[in-house]
Amino acid sequence: MNRVIKNYSKLNSSLQDEVYMGYSEGELERTAFPYKGKITDGVICQYEDVIYLIPISTIIARRSGSSDDIDDDDDESSPIDVEVEEDSE
Image 1 (cartoon, helix red, strand yellow):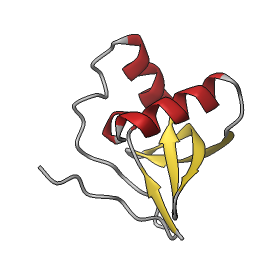
Image 2: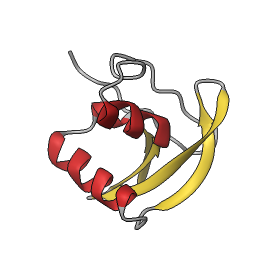
Image 3: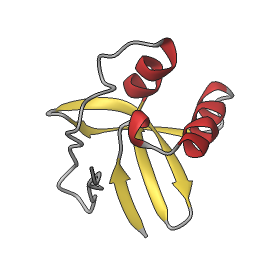
Image 4: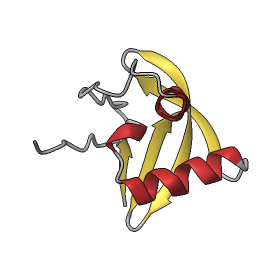
C-alpha cells in the first residue's frame, strides 16, 4: 500500500469532500509528520490502495478561502517509506 503526503487542494473534489467531512466530524486519525521541513499535524485518510497524509493547515486554508497553500506545488515527504505523488500538468 502506498503512502502519500498530499496537499488537500491537490485531491480530487470528491475526495476533498470525504476528507473534510471526516476531519470536521473527528473521524479521521490524526498524526504528526514532516512536511516542508517542519513537523506538522495532519490526518490519515485511506482511499482505494493509497494512504494519504494530509496536513490540517492545507484543509483549513482551502476551506476558509485562503490562498496560502493552494498554489503550492511542492509536496514533501518523510524519508520513511512515504511516496510523493507528482501532479501532471
